Length: 394
Image 1 (spheres, one colour):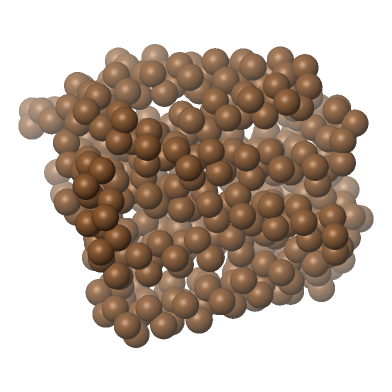
Image 2 (cartoon, rainbow, N blue to C red):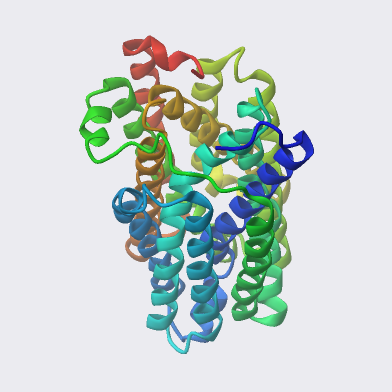
């Protein structure tokens, strides 16, 4: 447990380093979205075929988040973080050297294994090392790290990939993680495992109807989002005939809007908790539905990406806060399930976007995502009426 004598400055530094770790882990998960065409060209493959890498990564996380969390639940958390980062760095070395697509996928599986455990433990660790009474701010800082991965990580990774090659992008992420590992080991105290829950927690959590309803919402809304977002780069090239620089700008604006969404959630989330989540799901649904119409109009697609990015960040925060509030007695298990289910949505969305682009048209990814988003909107309204405890942020 964190010492009560630690200074607030040190406590905040620990939270900041965990937020930077969130930035690095989210950057590597999503940076292939901006590099699909480059990776495809280097292996002489179709872009849609390379996109299956996103699904494999996400489903490895989805399938192994809970088993790995339970396997490591008694390991002291500082040591566990060190092991995760070593696996993460080694896998990025393999990514940067990948001689064929199979070796690249293997390296991504290694990264996904580290990711699965990292996101199972990080929210509860940030709360533990944060200054007293600053739980919400610590979680918000983690969310900011996530947002910055979209703001800076994905577009910078794309720019590096354009000028120095996509292998360099992965190499730089691995180097950044190595530096971060050294800093974390110097600043973090020993953190004995606590309140992790156990295998018996799983059926207990699934006997909470409101929590199960929230997990279903996570699955549907994330599937909707990633059906369109996973293929935004080839979509802009094929449908809008946009150049590389404009596509990079859109990714930058999408992520920047995520920071705005985080600020709005921190400011208004407790005042209008249910209205904010319903409105945010409605906004991403509308954005995806309008995607094909806005694509050929630079001003329209710019505004649409800002609204979409802002709304998606608010959705992620609102769902995470509710899951933590509904499972205070087994936070690591609940967040492991959340991470796994979130990644089921990512994988399903990326796979669905792949199938739409192969068997329908690339221009249809937004429409299909919008239809699923509409289902998520109706489900959200229904569960808010059924379970009043979901109407607040906990």
